[in-house]
Image 1: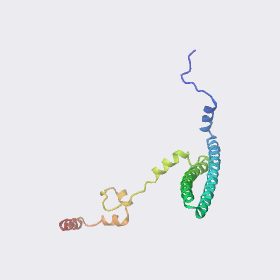
Image 2: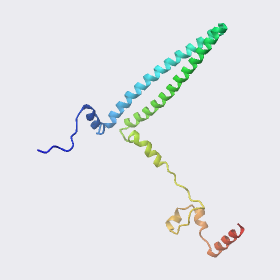
Image 3: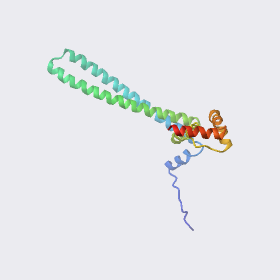
Image 4: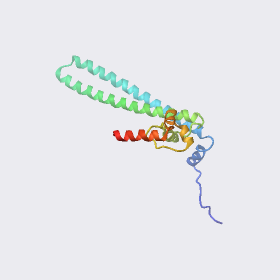
Length: 179
């Protein structure tokens, strides 16, 4: 009896991978993004609460600094500086978390749309490729003799190509002579 060349281990993690790429992929992605969104919102609330406490401490330290002596004032100024630095750190954490949360919300919308918008990772690459704009015809384009290409050009360029060949040659010669 020959052994199969490829064996698939059917652990819980592999089973989840198979389901993820099956027809329930969008639902599983939506559940995952929903959990991630809730976790990020809880973390955001914790950071905001810590930020509020730090600002209250800073305000209290500033008020105590007004009534303090010189030695106490120096210590309070150092603590206020430390509190300001920790406030800035918390604010930057909050901004980063907000960016992550926005991205998760976008991915959640895409997965709730049933995958009609494509996979979240693939959509960014597709958007970059589709943003190419068609360049309008200008005077520096090489002339084309194909009639269908001539019709695609704007009327002003198309009309300027018609006319007496000798007249065009004379105009070209006069322009060349001026330069």
